[in-house]
Amino acid sequence: MKSYLKYHKLIVFLLFLLLSCNPEDDTRNPADYELYISISADKYPAVSPDGNLIAYYHECLDYPEPEDYPTGLYVIGIDGTNRKLLLKGGHWSPSWSPDGQWLVFTSGGIIQIINLEGDSVRTFQGISDLPLFFPDWSKDGKLILFGSPLTGGGGFTCTPDFKEVKQIFNFYHILAYPVKWAKEDKLICSMHSNEWNYEEIVIIDTTLTNQVRLTNNNKSDRDPTFSSTGDFIAWSSSVQICRMNMDGSNKIKLDYGQYPTWTPDGQYIIYSFANSDFTKEVLWKIDINGKNKIQLTY
Image (cartoon, rainbow, N blue to C red; front, side, top):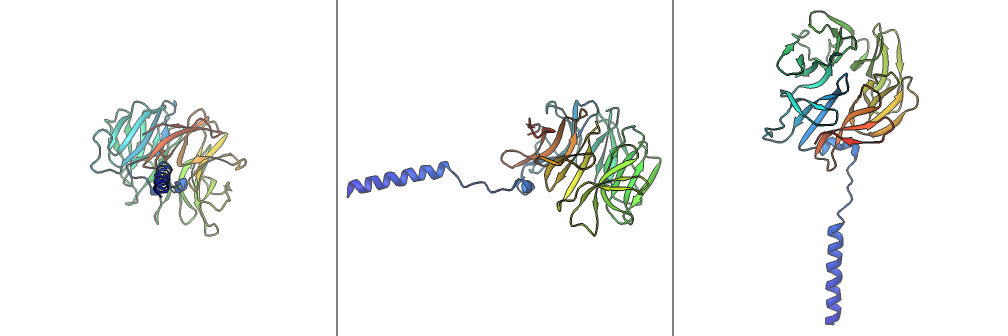
């Protein structure tokens, strides 16, 4: 009897060790990673025209915020080093000027421009109190494209000095938001329609006479962006980073994540996704074939 009890205790002990070393399977869905983020979130990356820098918005979810990494607009090297705070606070969705010396961004629905040294800020006075978001600097540097999702809003352009403003469409014409420059006189956007269940990626021209729908997959398709080489489009499809040809063909999934942006050589995509334990949303870099994935922020 004593021998039986001895072996019984041994078996119980071994089972305890086995269970303690093999916790329950992690059932978290990577597409829902934002539900688990608790420490910080790095969003809206934008690569400089020379490919050396990444601007992004860092949101600290901890309180009090750490003094060495508060919420703000940041710039880092393309390899994730040499982090620099440009402007503290809620300043997001940056876009580079073609010369790489300025960034246009959104602050609480207000469009602003800051220089790379962080010591000069210009503010757009706005349009009839509309909140304005997702500015995108044109490749020739002459115009900034932005949008407002409210009634009376739509898509707008302005000159970098904020003096000449033009509305190119309103939501009575098309439900497109946000909108980015594509090529020549064309724009790319996530478009809504009463005939569709989700947002779809669409290319339109500034006259609104031609529309080319690129996705039709019953998924939420957002954040489209053209490669600077003109070969591919990257976007987020139900929180998965995808790539397709310019005509919508050859769609492939690369990784989970959001807010994709291209490196100037068209070989890599920078995007946001969770870190290994899902406590932070960080920036990642991946090649166009879904390989060579590197974490850039921590």
